[in-house]
Image 1 (cartoon, rainbow over the protein chains, first blue to last red):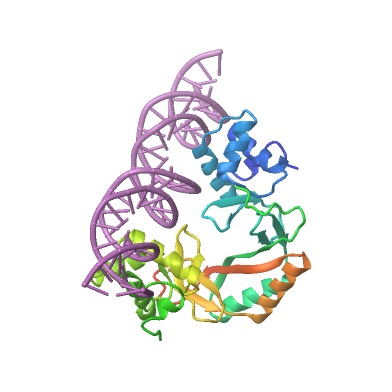
Image 2 (tube, rainbow over the protein chains, first blue to last red; image 1 turned 120 degrees about the vertical axis):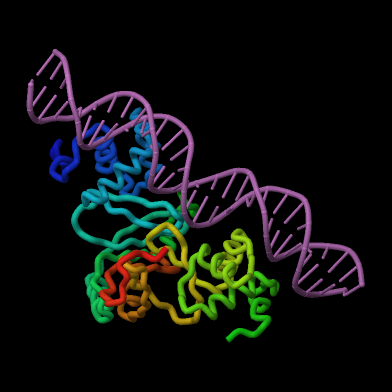
Length: 143
Length: 143
DNA sequence: ATTGCAAATAAGAATGATTATCATTCATGG
DNA sequence: CCATGAATGATAATCATTCTTATTTGCAAT
């Protein structure tokens, strides 16, 4: 998926903490992780990386375009691997399950809404909050 | 705009702090206010309401449907009067200027995206981050 | 291999937003 | 008017995040 020196190609030195964080995102079943979750997962696998470093590295990865930051409800940021294609999110308010979707019409209408008002669009965030109605939905938010 | 006992109709006692906060939103030129801003504006007009009360009242108003809470970038919540019609927001990243818009197509496509995946939609948030390109844009975020 | 220095790290203090606590005060029904 | 429960305000607590600082590391040039 990544060359060992992929970090260098984005202008970051290949340090152990950064490699650990990156491979965690590549290996994890959960696409969306918060700083706290990354911290705990690394701890659990024996890699004791300071929480401050996690925050720094996540921010660096975001700036480098490796990760994408999302502000879901709840005041904490979650990150996901930026694997090319843009998409928006549907979040289940019961179990926290996240599904991604992309709708070209929505994208186009957004651009139009912005340019019609003289704005130059930089970015946008669209989150749909819903119930997933899955039988497996544990009906509680996973922290 | 509001009957004097409008608060009662939503199950809240008509207390001074609540009336102050409500009329601030009704009077203010800025539709979007944070807790801190409400606090300072009330202070400035001689009404010394505790910050904790502001937070409490804003949350109560949100639950009562009087106010709508938004999570813009920057980690703090902003509130606006819930005056019926739903709309989304374009936020200028330079000056913080906010404009509202409504696009029926976007709304419809969102509903479709959710139901197509078996979700029951509860709510959504769509923020477009952009440059407003206004000559008056002071090119810095207003805190 | 050694040195030097910028970059990176860990630890914890500091910050900013928000919530919890709790004694006091207030609003409202009777 | 008065009791009673709700609301308030001052303050402490909490939570996520950022900053500070001392220390360590990467790595290129000796």
